Image 1 (cartoon, helix red, strand yellow):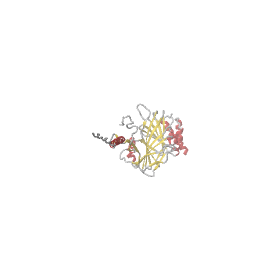
Image 2 (spheres, one colour):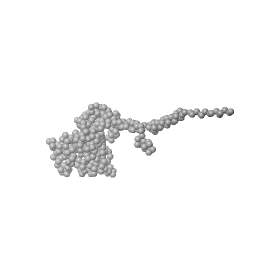
Image 3 (cartoon, one colour):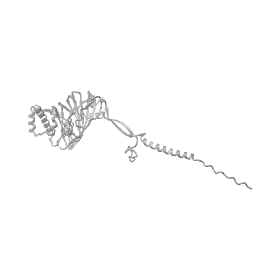
Image 4 (tube, one colour):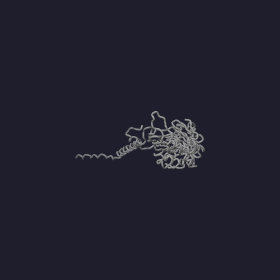
Length: 372
């Protein structure tokens, strides 16, 4: 029975992805799932996601930055339970950037550097869901058109009917995606498959930041799917924001560099998309992580409560030359003052030396000899 379920899920996923796109290029990947272009190449430069977990339900709002020669592509995201999907709010990411911005501190230095005078050369710096037909067994339980995205939500039903449908339509599952999906199938997860085809008047390749998507599904624990990123051929970069009741942390590195904490603290926004999403989960934790060797990724990011809720904010230093007023460097005053002191000392020593020079008395005048 488990084998049939696994086969059904894999065949369903292949059917939908290949129905959306005629797969002719090797798969790329991002942390949110396999990225498959129809023609040409595409890569994910940056992945920014917000994960909200209230103990029972998880929400993920994701935004990808891509570039390449492909005009359209598809990606798939595994989810532990059936998901609902809608367009995300771009303003949410603006709110997050402001809320987690590093603290800027000024740090002064004394001696001039390469971009200071006199080393600078004197310049100064001056659609509605469409369920599968009855008895088809394809397992597409919902289909929506959301802005530039064609979104399908998948589940497995009758594996024999799915196999027949797949064979009749000439579809074939890519081997690498098959292996990467196996752990999710074994756990009985479902999938969200998305066709990305941003409408452009000039039919230009996809590049830049895509519209965000907002997924909601039941989850007993906070988890961010990353396993499919092992299919990527280039280094992956993840920015992950976590909203929960307390400060959260990844359980492991899952094959990447050590996650770097960039922010931890309670959300203070009272209005806007971030305030709305953080209602009931007011603690925000932010991490960034690099995956230099994607094939080393060995699991999904599981998050746990940290031992403490200590707040943290990065500090960036703005180095400035120490000056008096807006323009006069202290080092120049110091050098001039030292030179003036040396010159004054020399003058005083010369004057003192002259004052101490002995005065030679005039020679005595001899009286003329007496006359005889």
